[in-house]
Image 1 (tube, rainbow, N blue to C red):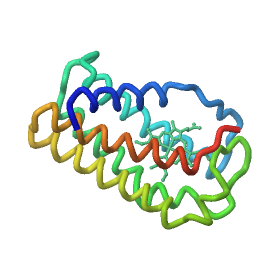
Image 2: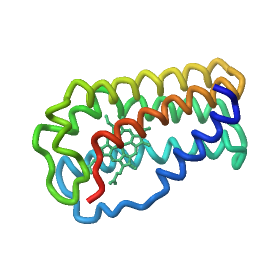
Image 3: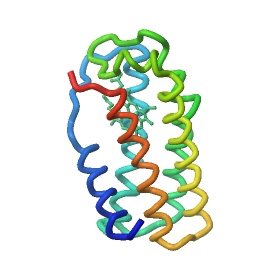
Image 4: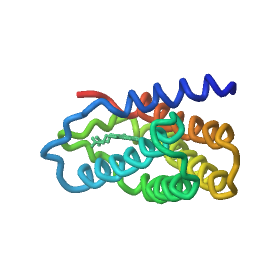
Length: 152
Ligand code: HEC
């Protein structure tokens, strides 16, 4: 990917995350996963701001954010979606449980891509490589949301 494309992807991703979805009144597992997603999103925004040049680049902080995202991804994320947990105001799609392999695959690839973001930042890789890894990671958020998150 050309750097300009990477930056575009990042900008688009962040714009998408910025939209405020009302989740007032959520309880139980739905609240838990909304909180986890919000925590993930906070870390994504932090890194995005650095890569866009709106905040000072800090590889240590990016590695920490990558680790935080990875911790909430994979099995930890999958566990927050027990079958049929669709209580309002959840935006989860019922198709999650019909297409579980695909759904859990996205959660796993988020973990893998967050770990590689962390690894690159830790090794002091150049910003272009870090931005490419970030763009790839943000792509898994988008793909999973497009397939399995519905705006109600
Ligand atoms: C495996 C699929 C999957 C992946 C990967 C994923 N999400 Fe989500 N996300 C969902 C689903 C499903 C919901 C809706 C949950 C609900 O409302 O019950 C959601 C909800 C959210 C919300 C709204 C939380 C709220 O308070 O209502 C945010 C913000 C969010 N995701 C950010 C992210 C970011 C950022 C990433 C990537 C770094 C990401 N997600 C990766 C499936 C995913």
